[in-house]
Image (cartoon, rainbow, N blue to C red; front, side, top):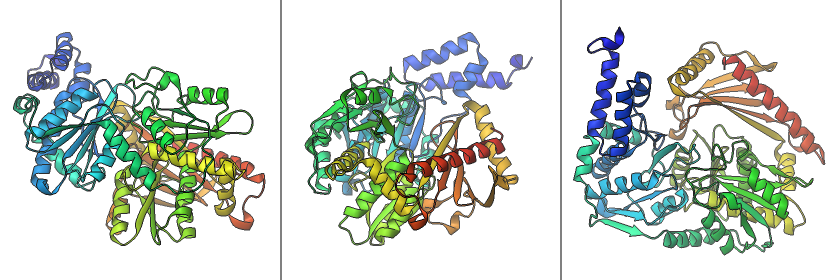
Length: 580
């Protein structure tokens, strides 16, 4: 039998497991992997040691557990070693501020963060470590304000409770992009065993400094409020907010309070940080059911606005009264349009720059044209959005805004990443200004539809975990590349763009990616695998005419409903053609 062959695949898996145990300094994960060996469960052993988590997408993320295919202390130690070697080889330490390390409320985050700090400091890199858990935007802000040589956050953002990760910022205070992430990955691969790395660290190195989160938060609030558009607002706005058991609750309340919004009510069941996320299956405000408690409280207290952050507070969801006693959650594209319209209308810059990801609705491009702004379309992710904005800044433009439809918004240049806290303040300012003028947020959305055309967007995610799922995703993309559909939902496909090719003809922020874009009449349908989860994502954007040919009066909602149905049909048709 194969299992009995000396040197066969099963023996190789066992040997890989034993080698990992020998190099793992954590007694807990050593014992967990040893138990699998003792049980003789080859499939389980393979699931933990056959392959490894890869460093990329601005860091590394995965399910917590033993072995190279899980997130654990050994992975954190080797990742820190690779990052430290990269910093030492490429950066002038005396010219830069200290590295800054923070973490979220996930149960394994404090230990992983401590390992990162220990390795960076032992390598001779000055390090600031936050004294307690904190939102990702506070770390990203500290990187900018103190010109950090690098910044690291231990977080898995909106992933399920079983996951954790390490997010890394480059010298320009933006998440890592190629080729730098590949260079760090190579150094991680060349790192010694985690046991050897751990043995070199010291408990309290002299170049490690603890900084208080309260101090960082005060500086963050000052900088955000300094860039706020100054006008009279209705600060009696009643806001319901939820951090979804994450670390953003106290900081959102403090920021809103500093801006004059005193009536902010956190969902009590979700207010305290809890890395087990007991009230939600997925702590992502995009997921069905995640906002149920917030919407229930909003109905109970007759709120004017509902805000929700994900667990590390870099994303924001928003819901508004629907006029019938309930609340309407807005899509990321709707919020992205509202934010873009306000920031472009109130900026004092002569040549503002904005950016949005390629899978987001194209409204921001129209708004930029109307306001004489520069607009960049980028690959998915704020690492690309902010690198595009910095490139445009080098060309004389002033970065003011970036967004992606997955509830990510950067509304202030003092944080070069998505920031759900400052975005929450902007949402409150928009709602308050509208109410003072006798209008609603829904009225503002209707204005955008009349001026720039009604739109509807649909996103569908197909979860395909494990090696079989990865194979299914690859097979679906291969089928669509070799035999693209000639029509979708009965509408002819005019053109198909494969972003895996032609990168040399595009700006660096729109480089090679596993992305297919289908032009279907006036609409767009896009397909790409997720960079952080085992998902294949489909985006469909349906657009109607603008100006005199566009919707008028109460016709906006009717038009949007028809466009949404069209987008749903296009997304379903592409999923069917892909064989999923």
